[in-house]
Structures are given as structure tokens and as C-alpha cells.
Length: 532
Ligand code: FAD
Ligand code: NAP
Image 1 (tube, rainbow, N blue to C red):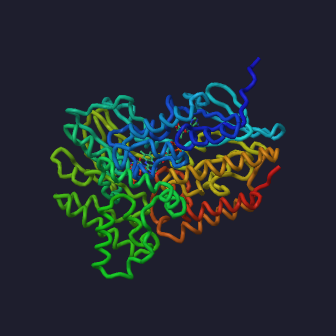
Image 2: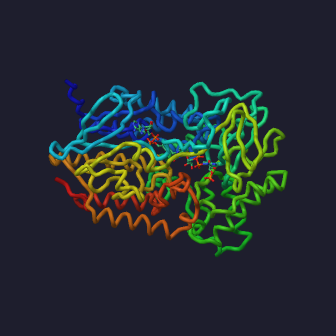
Image 3: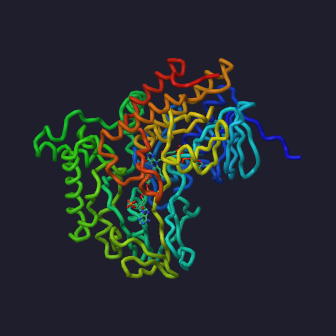
């Protein structure tokens, strides 16, 4: 006879920033909460992405938990933008500090989940057996399912190949090797300078160039750190109230209202601040074509001024999408890397990769030979991890079927027909358009308070109404189409995955506005939900 399934109040899938904080909150409430993760270690994104050069591009003093003031004050980041090993150390420190490990089960993959109407709980299937839980939280990450394009012949390749999001523990030594890399997104832009410095030769296969802003990373200045720690509460509040979850000042003037000289000076100032400050230089960069073009051309001029071969510089200049409508990249020495004699840029826009061969790959009728190939080809973002699990709600309704033409949600957190299911930073929430730490903390706190409230009231289910969901879907769509974002063939639009519906996935209305909406929903008796 099969053993009875293990019972939890809350099952959380995912031991990244979201899952760990939620576990901490729920345990403080006295609930039996439990995390499962398919990884052999906690850390989520920061466990899986161990490629050379991997680091955050939101400043670490902003891209870190704010929920515990002692943690905030005691932890010191060694650089402005911490690298992956340091962020993983931080997450491990958090797991130990709050004694979370006892409730985390690793190397456990959730494959299916079924709502049991009679028992009002979720029956969850994992590779290690069955589990039940009243509340089921998918904290499975927006960027956790790697996209590996199915090029013909990959299994023939006699060299080694790696996806950046499943990098070998212990790293890879490319010394003396001919290396090829596919992709020029945020990941590639971080890793290309590192690999180029080690390999004998690096060939970069670029389908679409991206806009990248310098990070100006460097060691943490102790005085700046102390000054920031003194006002940590104020900066965290700024992050939570603003549109991006970050603390860069948002301009309220339009790019076209100022003179060309003033505009250039502001772009120059923002360029030297680095990172996402640039996108906040004027308030119409992402809504007005002409304004956007001024910012885009500023960055193109920087590329032209940096890359010595004019033909290579031009290839690196993006023209196919407005600046910011594909996620802005942040780099250290990306463009200068193309001045190295051991780096070649190959444009594959009009000549897609035809096949992988025993010794390399073929594009445009030319074969390139490599010892190693790197796939920096991104993720099945936002919906990938949710749909990888066969989730079935009321009457056996399948989430995969419901979302076949694109996701539907209420607040990006819940789905009609799927009681007691929460999707952390899910499609329809600000998530990837923000500093995700701010969005993660907001979601965790909302879900924790919701479950706490229902438990206190001895209520057992909460479910979004069909009307509330339809209104939210429409609002998410309307906000997106008031901007330039849907113009880009981006992963925000699902455009990077063949066959994926083209729907703008995140909520672009802003973190502050979204937070107010969520708070108002809760304050009004969970408006838009049926509680039973
Ligand atoms: P994740 O960290 O993705 O964790 C999800 C976990 O769920 C994973 O461990 C996965 O193994 C597990 N999981 C998924 N499906 C299953 C399943 N079926 N069964 C069991 N386990 C499962 N955001 C920023 O705001 N700033 C940055 O600078 C930034 N840098 C990034 C750099 C990289 C390279 C990447 C890929 C993303 C970056 N992000 C950044 C986004 C980042 O994903 C989030 O900031 C954050 O780390 C997400 O945390 P999470 O807990 O929600 O999800
Ligand atoms: P990405 O932005 O989706 O980039 C993937 C790259 O691979 C693109 O250049 C894409 O080209 C290319 N590609 C995909 N399929 C291809 C194919 N079949 N043939 C040729 N080229 C192909 O993925 P990512 O770089 O991993 O970044 C994803 C997100 O993770 C980022 O946007 C960001 O949110 C996060 N991230 C953040 C950081 C950071 O700096 N902190 C670092 C890494 C990742 P097209 O553009 O033409 O599709």
C-alpha cells in the first residue's frame, strides 16, 4: 500500500529569494510550510547561473532583502554589484540565519498538482512521492527554465557545450580553446568579456544587438556603504513606492521639452551613473518614439566611439527595437571586447544557424569550428516554470489549456478556477520590469497576510472571480499597449520561444501603483475573490 502523502499547510515550490522569504514569514505564523526545489542547493537563479561574469545589475544594496533590519545592517557587499558567488553566499547566510534548512527538501521536482475539491487541498506529485497542502505556492521563478534552441545536429557535436543557466559546478577552463557563443542578451553581455580574456578565440553569434549601459562596478566604498545604511529605511520606502522598485530618481520632464544640449548632458550624466538610471532620464523614453530615438542614438554613438572597427560597431548598434523595450543590458567592458584580436562578431540575423556539426556550426553556408559552444540563449520566461508542471484546478481544468493563448490571472498572483494557488511574481505582475527584490518582498508579504487572514478566520479557500481576472487581464494589456514595449520581439512578449503566444507578460503599471492596488484589494475584504 502506498504511504499516506506528507501533509503541509503550505507547499512552496522554489528555494530562491521568493521561496526562502515566504517560508520564513509563514513559519513565524506557526504554519507548517515546506519548500521543495529541484536543485541540489537553495538559491534559485543564483545557484543555477554560475557562468563567468554573472552578477546582479541592480545595486546590491537595493537588490537584497529589506525585511530584517539587523540582516541589512550586518551584511556587507564587497562590490557595488555583487557577483553570483557572493549573492549565493548571502542566500545561504539567510537560510542559516533564519534556520530555514530543516523545511527545505532539495532535488525534488514537482511534476503535477491537482486541486481536491472535497478535501479543499492540493495533491502534489513530485519525483519523490506525493504531498498535500492547503495552500500551494509556485515560487518557481520567471527565468528558471533555460531555452536551448533545437538546432539540428547538437547531439553530434564532439566538443563540449554549455547553457549559461546550467553551468557546471567548479567552472570551465577555456584556456587555449576556440569558443563559440550564441546570444547577445544580458547573460552573454556579462560573460563574453570574461570568456574572451581566457579563450584562444571567441566567436560571438549575434541575431539581435541589444542596448547596454556600463555598470561602473567596483569595490564597495565603506563611507558610501555607511551613508547608505544610515538611510536604509528611506531608500527601501522609495523603492517600494516608485515605478521600478529601484531608487534611481525618476525624471518628470520629457526628452523633447529640453534642448538637444540639455538632453545630451542628462544622458551623459545617467550613463556615468550606470545601469537602469539611464532609462529614467526622461519620463517619455518608453512611451514616445521620437523621445526614445534620442536615447537610442546616444547609446549608438557610445558604441561607435568605443568599437574601433566601424563595421563591427554598426553591427552592434540596435535599430530593430526602441531602447528599453527589450530588457536593458548592463555591462563591464562589453563593447571594448570587440576590439580584441581574438574576438569575432558574426551577424546571423539573415543567416540563422543551420546546424551543429561534429566540430562546430554552420551559418550562411560557412562552418565555424570550436572546442566549446556556449548557449546564452535565455529562458522560457514567466510562464515556462508554471506550465512545466501539470497543474489542474477545479473540475480537472488544466492550466496549460487555460493559458494556451497566453496567461490569465488576477493580480499576476492567482488564477480563477485554481483555488489557493499563488504564483509569485507571475505573469500579470510587475516582476521582471522591476528590481525583483522589491516585487518579491511585496508578493511574499501579501500572500503571507492573505493566508494568515484566512487561517485566522477559519476560511479554507480563496479564488479569484472570473470577472476580476478578466478586468485585470485587460488592465495589464492596456497598460502595456500605452507604451512602446509591445513593439519589440522580446521575451517580455514571449517572442524568443517558437510557438509561444505573443502576449505582453508582465504588468507595466509600476510597482508603487501595483502595491497600492494589492493593498486595496486586501483592505476591501479581498475584493475580486471568493473566500469560503
Ligand atoms: P528563482 O530564483 O528562479 O527560483 C526558482 C526556483 O524554483 C529554482 O531554484 C528552481 O530550481 C525551482 N523550480 C522551478 N520549477 C520547479 C519544479 N517544477 N519543481 C521544483 N523546483 C522547481 N533580477 C533583478 O531584479 N536584478 C538583477 O540584477 C537580476 N539579475 C539576474 C541575473 C540572472 C543571470 C538571471 C537569470 C536573473 C536575474 N534576475 C535579476 C532575475 C532573478 O531571477 C530574480 O531577481 C530572483 O532571483 C528570482 O527569485 P525567485 O525566488 O522568484 O526565483
Ligand atoms: P535573452 O535576453 O533572452 O537573450 C538570449 C539571446 O540568445 C538573445 O541574443 C537571442 O537573440 C539569442 N537567441 C535565442 N535563441 C536563438 C537562436 N535560435 N538563434 C540565435 N540566437 C538565439 O536571455 P539572457 O541573456 O539569459 O537574459 C534573460 C534575462 O535574465 C535578462 O533579460 C535579465 O532579466 C536576466 N539577466 C540579468 C542579468 C544581469 O545583468 N543581472 C544577467 C543575465 C540575465 P534574439 O534577441 O534575436 O532573440
